[in-house]
Length: 522
Image (cartoon, rainbow, N blue to C red; front, side):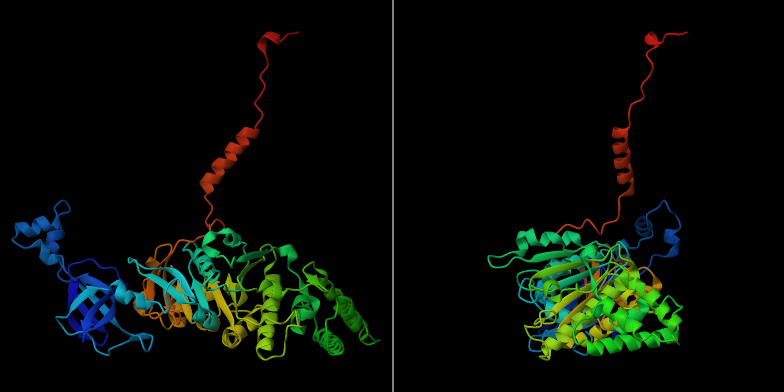
């Protein structure tokens, strides 16, 4: 027992305890032979020292209490406010709020394993589970429901250095375990997930019949097929702000005419010839302007035949890391747009029986999971990005076709609010910026106010997990990764400086001094 209920109201209840309890911890009480889970919120001293007892900095307040005949223990009790979560109903598979608060005098206990285990929808290690960590301060493991993550999306939000990439690595590790074998793709703008390549050779991921594969796609190997660009993509690439409406109209006419004639793919040269076919004596300069801008399509990233091979990137039990570091941001957005658009078309067409095994480039007969790192670049709150429209479409409709998305960002206030609100499971780590905290409070309905207030004080590797993949929001200590985490760590500048100086000292040629005995004067 840790306390006794003192008072109840519409906000919850208060209990008295002589123990120091952290905000967010779970407790419970007994009602009609049911254990009712509750969450500790705010603490304050039940009885405060008289100010006069604190005026002399050299004297202990307890000594002053004893001198005046007070019992120092009277000042060691605390009043805690708490809220009721409920009892777990096995038939419903969720916590049921009893709609009443505990009566004064009811004893409050620490929540044990027998009730804390029900926070998870699935047991750690079973099929469809993702063991992410432990209830903060407890040994109880927390496993997220992979089914809910993939069907209803997830967000990982944290300030720089709070453990965001590390946590994504843990989640991906779980998806590649033998009890999940998910097809996962990470869209990696900074090239920081390459250490996950260790998954292929780590024994914890392998069984007699299964070994996950990791494919790392370098920037030089990423190509956008000309035929996969829509007319809006072309214009956004060509238009530097000086493309006239007449140019756009003529280009659209050439594009749509060629698209209708060529039911399959077309090449740059074929599109250039179609543009040239529209030339007449009244639009010479306009066609010349289009052709000049069309030269931007000669960038190495564009190709007439090579494309993003969905069937190769999304395989059961395979992690594909698309390393787009070093590629300019507008092209990163374009790559994401084309990849997501083709993925949505493939899954929708396969589900609706438009694509079969003969459609090698479009047939994708199973759900997939995509991690979008730096998500605020690809779906910004203000302004436009080439990838924003299709990403929002997938977030709102992708669950019907089995496309799960994980949005990862360190600046939620810069991330499109509608996109963030579509992520029905949230892993939120330390957030210090008040604007970002406000955005999270508005977007995450399942996390209570008292948990949101904990965001600035979370330590590295601690997270608030809430949403449909878990039965009730919880403070969680993220588990250790099975793979190393070298890319996401901050650089140890002093150590690197010292190593560089040591290296330079080794290379330095010693100064040769003249031998005075051999110095013959004139």
